[in-house]
Length: 112
Length: 117
Figure 1: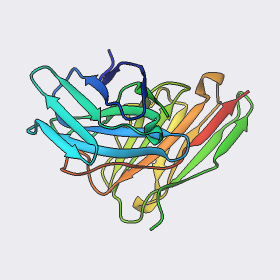
Figure 2: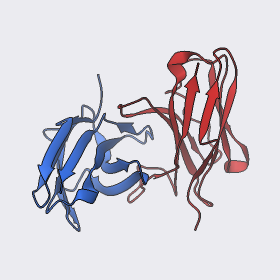
Figure 3: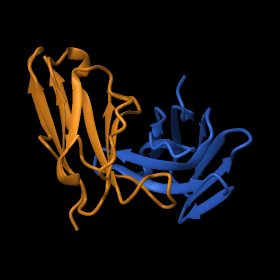
Figure 4: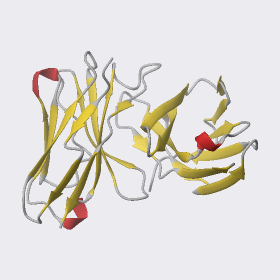
């Protein structure tokens, strides 16, 4: 089974609207990270949330983590056309293991 | 400063040939990862290097795949006797330290697109 499954797999919204993406995982984690991938800039790290944190903000990004439900959400507020990209969550397991597991991503399209 | 670089950016090869993909991590980064991304898919972990420790090879799909990291810096991923299912984008990432530490994001290279005919 796949760790870090994003939902929805595709999302299309109008510029200015908020976009919410979810990630579920199966095993205990040390931290969870969100990345963005677009053709212009490749894969870029957005935000990291540790297992003992519940919420984190960075500019227009808000990430929540619920370890009891093994899920995380990424909220992008006031979306822009430039936010069009694929968004991946990546989980780093607890216990000192370094194998990072990425989900298949959410493809976000922001329509101007 | 310079980011992670990978070469070649594109590689077309015939089935059965060997290929070598190179990754130059950010200077000073001790952790280095290789991933594979098939079209429209997520990233599949292949191998992880941390300093002088033995690499974590648990993600390598077969014994045709191998990787080394010389001098704790440059890494080479080698695929022997390539198959069509090896076609994918191979991504390398480096990190200042192990990712289970706080604030350790991975910095990705642009990838090598491998096409096996």
